[in-house]
Structures are given as structure tokens and as C-alpha cells.
Length: 407
Ligand SMILES: [Zn+2]
Image 1 (cartoon, rainbow, N blue to C red):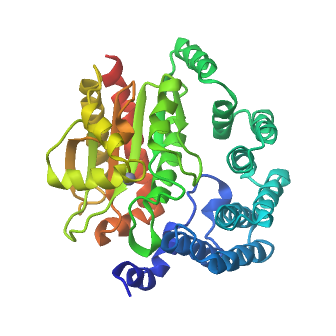
Image 2: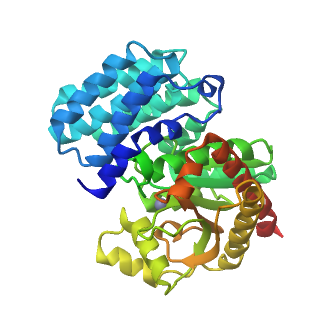
């Protein structure tokens, strides 16, 4: 039995705490039901242990269990979440099996969420449905009608931003951004690291970096949006794979004022823990090199890409602002958390050649929010209360750093 698997088994129950949805709406404040925790953990575990869907039988069994459980024994919001995740299971199955019944099941599950008026995943389901039509089924007309439905039914949602992005050529998006700028609004792009097939770091009890980064990013966005002069956009809204290069081009197209990529760390050294913020620059530090290898890994397979990164690190005129932003985000997070959580370690502000930051036209930083494979950090990160404090401290740091950019 390998080390990570035994960790999974020993600490399997740990994941249940983490998987409590963020207390952003009334229903998620309720404790999740045992059936939901169980099926959701099964889903995460299989995704984690068999990311490339080798064991079709297990995936099929999971898909059918998820459908069954979602039809009974769950609250409406839990049932919707399980159906949404089941659609991902069937999409994965289709990509492996090429059996059209699998993709039909994925579509049917998403359509169910779209027509269910009580579901708060309807907008996410429409986006996902559009992406399925466009990317998997190559039905552009059907894709466009899903995105248009998002704009019509949920014009104020985060998903509307995504839908507009998928519908419009980039020149029109630029005009949108310019309009916003005239209002005196500052726009921030938050980038939840990893997603989809790319899990990022793996922590205790099936804890995945990509899930933590999404939870935190969504919460930070909510907090920042309380300021009417701040506009926040996310590079991904759900568990989907977004190539690194698309993340900064998303920010560039919108003429964003700041790009913040959120990550969680892991290390083979048991004594390493803590929080750090990076800006883009070259570095000879060995530990940093390891981290960069992992963070860059999902996209940077070929030698030519790597050469491009190392050769094109100059981010003209933005490094100075980026350093100030990194400092502000780091200082305010430390200030917000170190009193209540004295054991936390504060590593500092560092430089590193992160691919996701290359090519951004605005100040940009990458935040490593603690080591999720380290027991002391992981135990905190799974606690909603801790994440709330972390999100609020990060939001304060990000908000204050805007002054550094425009002074
Ligand atoms: Zn990462």
C-alpha cells in the first residue's frame, strides 16, 4: 500500500469536514448529510486515485451510485451538487469509452439542473452544458444557446461573465473593460489554481489543492465585491481545467488591474509549513525550483515551452508594482491570522518563474496558502472558520494593494 493511500484510509473521515460547503448561502450553513459526505468522498477519492479513468467499471459504478443517491436521501442543494458532479463522471467516461450513452447521461443530468428552478447550480450547469456542446460534441449552435440562456436568466451572476467571454470575440470584451474603467472601477482577476484533471497538490484525506483554491477564491470574491468600486472576475467557476496561458489572457482581455493566482503548497519535507507570496522573476533557490516545477507542470510539458518561460521573464514595468502587491497581500494576511493562529509559520515574499504569471499585462502575484499535506496546516485549512479568516485577511491585503498600483 503506498503512503498516500494509507493516509487516505486513515484520514478519510477528515475530508468530510473540508467538504462542508462554504457558508455563502443559507443551506450550506447546515451540516451535510452522511449520505452526501459518503458519496462525495467516493467521488473525490476515485478522481484522485484514477485521474485518467483507467478503471471504467469503477467509474460506471460510481456514476450510477451518484444518480441513485441524488434521487433520494439528500437535501435539494446536496442532490444538485451530486448531479453536477455525476455529469463530470459521465463526461470523463465518454472521453474514455466513446459510448454516446455516457455523454447523453451527462447532458441529461445538466439539463435537469437547468430546468430545476430551486437549484442554485442552474447557471453553472448552463455554462458546463455549453462547454460540453462546444468542446466535446462540437455543436456550436447548441453551445451558443446555452451561453445566451445564462445572460438572459442570470445576467448578474459570475457565470454571466464567463458566458460573455465565451460568446464574444476579445475586441468586444476589451470595450466592456474600458467602459468599466471610466466608472472608476478597479478590476481584479482571481485565479483559482489548477482544476479538472489537474489536481495540484494532494493533501490529507483526499484534500486537493484545486478544491481549496476554488473555495477560497469564491469567498474572497464575495468579500471584495462588497466594495462597489471593485469588480472581481474568476478564471474558473467550477472544477474545470483551464490552461495556464488562458488564465492571464483572460485578465489581459478584460484589462484587469490586478491578477492574483491562488494556490496551496505541498512538500516532501515533513517540517515545512507556512504561507508565502510570490512575484514573477527568476530564482536559483532549490526549494523554489521544486515548487515551480509542480505548479508549472500541468501545462509545461514540452521543452520549447520551458525555454519560453525562462527566456521571457521580463514583465516590463510591472515588477515593482507586483512586489508591492505581494508585500501587501502577505503583510495583511499575516496580520489577520497570526494572532488567532500563533502556530502558523510566515515564510515571506519570494520571487519565482511561475508560468501562470508570464504574459500578464498587469501587476500579478501568486499566493501559496499553506502546506495542505502538512498536518498542522491541513488541520486548519479544513476548518471553515479558519478559511473564513484566511479569505477575509487575503481580501483585505488584495484591496489595500490596489492603492500601491495606482499611486
Ligand atoms: Zn498550485
